Amino acid sequence: MSDQPRDAKPGKRATPNPDPLLTKAAACEYLGGITPPTLDRWVAKGRLPKVKYGPGRGSAVRFRRSDLDKFLNESVQTS
Image (cartoon, rainbow, N blue to C red; front, side):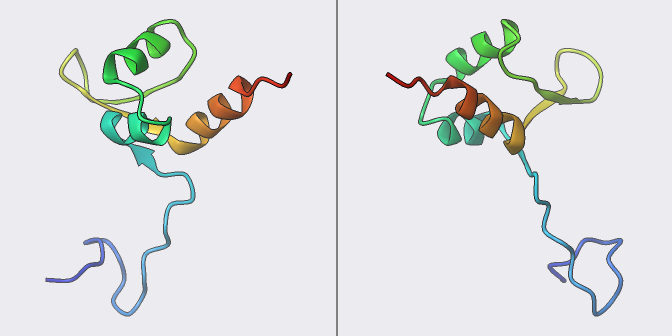
């Protein structure tokens, strides 16, 4: 079995995604180890955007790393 995606051409490597999508758990860790309920609150308040896959409440939710970076940069307070 190959490590390449099924649609990759033989002999070519897939280009890494410069803006990967993170799971909720990975996003929480990336944001400094916050809890999932905190992340849910920030999403509900519109502080962080999410990406949904599929219809309805059971759809998968992911977070763009660039959105998390932007959030972190905007949240920095200087004294």
